[in-house]
Image (tube, rainbow, N blue to C red; front, top):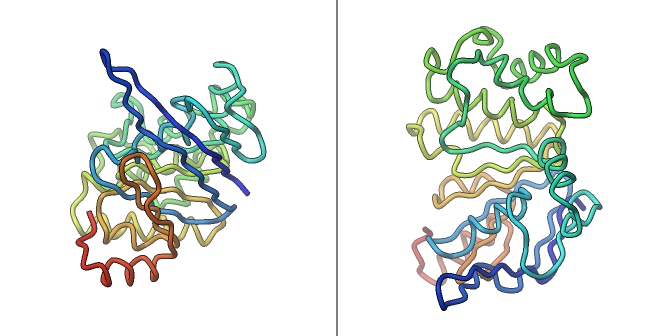
Amino acid sequence: MVIELKQVTKQYVVGPERIRALDGVDLQVDRNEYVAVMGTSGSGKSTLMNILGCLDRASTGTYCLDGRDVTRMGGGSLAKVRNERIGFVFQSFELLPRLSALKNVELPLIYSRHGWWGRRARAKEVLRTVGLTDRMRHRPNQLSGGQKQRVAIARALVCHPAILLADEPTGNLDSTTSDEILKLFAELHRQGHTIILVTHEADVARHAQRIVRMKDGKILSDLPTRQDAVSQTIIGATPT
């Protein structure tokens, strides 16, 4: 098992109010699963993503990543986990504009225990994996939106992460390019990667094996993709 959350809560204090963004969340993800997380604004999906990515801490409960309890780790240890065990893919790509695709992908290895040795070869390897052999020397402003997202995916993969977290990865792309990126995620999943994708689009979520639906900080349903589609049809809901 790669991810195990037990009774995770997250509270924020806003003035005199306490807002519970997550309310007793239990979640398990096995190695090589492909899971989509859906929910409307305020459902808790972004908070869940931040906790899974060790960008935020749970108020209560436990979170084990790849067999390690990250809720007990200090800041330095969490930074190491983020660098070496989690790959992030964002809607806005988050590439450094002055660096080539190759140098953008190399960046996480500078801070990794893998160090400098072999980092150029590893960066080239993952860029070939995402189909950018002929774009390694290009800067972000010389790349299309889909190519930028492929660079971001390569950067997320470069440290051999335990999980790949993708936050609305097709949100800034047209439908044709979105399909290409989703096909790439499907191929990465076939290669053995564990993927957790946050999206508000039902058509995107259906590319995953499971769909976890959230509401008011709780998991409303956690179903295989086909069963989720049947469930939505039965209750007459329009997925959001």
